[in-house]
Image 1 (cartoon, rainbow, N blue to C red):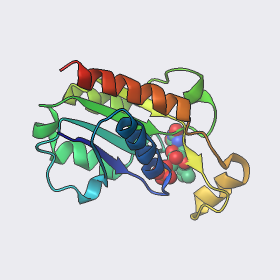
Image 2 (cartoon, helix red, strand yellow):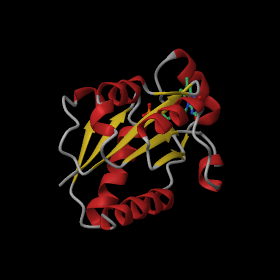
Image 3 (tube, rainbow, N blue to C red):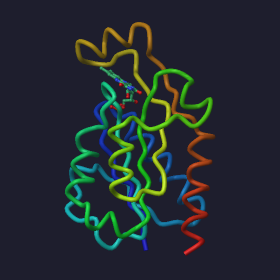
Length: 162
Ligand SMILES: Cc1cc2nc3c(=O)[nH]c(=O)nc-3n(C[C@H](O)[C@H](O)[C@H](O)COP(=O)(O)O)c2cc1C
């Protein structure tokens, strides 16, 4: 059975993070499907589900939120992890950052096994009024491969335990 990685991403950073997580799971012998959350019709039949969403103004990407609402019944029946991305500084890499309150609430409702915050990415050429202004001082990539590996190891260990 397959692990589904569903993501909500505005500027591609979280989509890339979902791919990084997927690649680490594949390297551990786990079959994965990495897909935009908005395009997923059914969350039935997966072994586990990881939902990743970008953070904007302390809110989780709408596609990730909607996905968890729409597929709540299926998600409550399998191991679920929530991933948020993320801070444009080292704060997520330095240690376990608590999830924003919205993600914490959804995690509690779904009985998620974890709610992890990863660093984010903002490219220097980011489009949008606010994003382009932010990019002048905050552009960079804080998605940490070693944090991704540690997360994938935890997920793989849980898969092996059932
Ligand atoms: C306008 C704007 C608001 C943001 N707000 C937050 C925030 O509240 N918390 C946070 O951790 N990161 C915040 N970020 C950083 C993004 O979460 C980060 O760039 C993320 O990697 C974006 O993912 P995406 O490329 O998948 O859209 C913000 C970025 C922008 C451009």
